[in-house]
Image 1 (cartoon, rainbow, N blue to C red):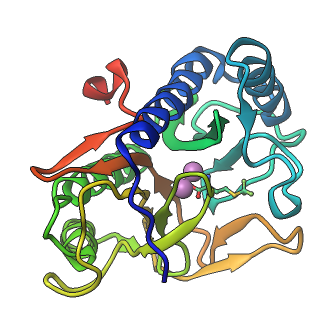
Image 2 (image 1 turned 180 degrees about the vertical axis):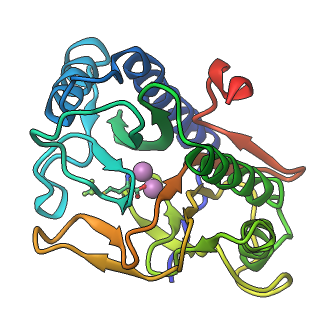
Length: 256
Ligand code: MF3
Ligand code: CO
Ligand code: CO
């Protein structure tokens, strides 16, 4: 396992990439309305990232992924491919944006609702959001990755939802997905010891039903095996001596 420690100069470039990724989500929010297709959301994000931000959408052609963002609706857990699906009232959609700027990646995702969400969809999104923040709160030099996973798992299961096991957070920097793997479940006090200068994502996927997932024949779209709803939020974070710095934080975060 090769975990990179970012220099102060590299940390500055991660801050820039992180802010740009958050800006894309801030921008796309008002477009998430009934009648728009996920292809249209992808086109708007692609144009903004390339033309306005002069950055690169990392998913495009990443291991053959055909679009610039991931759009995961309702029972889709992650890696949904934008297409001709039209959003309709009651849909819950995760939009996952990763940009590359000056050689460094910023990766963040949020849940959006079309019209008024159902009670369960709102509660699921809230628990995933709280779980992400409880995991982030564990980050500091000297803590261990198991502390992060345990905090998330405890909160999710207390609320009688389940944590997806097959996909996880990751180190991030010049490389989109680098070591370490950041599991969203586990035991406190175990796993890799964190050091200042590490940058990683925390991105729990939380299912309303059972934790099991299934990969669709398109090779990308991951859905819940039992077709229950799934929710996910993601931030990119820098580990510091005293704790953490969320690189993809938005002014909107305190409103969710
Ligand atoms: N952004 C996703 C993550 O959080 C990865 C998407 S890979 C893609 O790690 F190829 F599907 F875009
Ligand atoms: Co990620
Ligand atoms: Co992501």
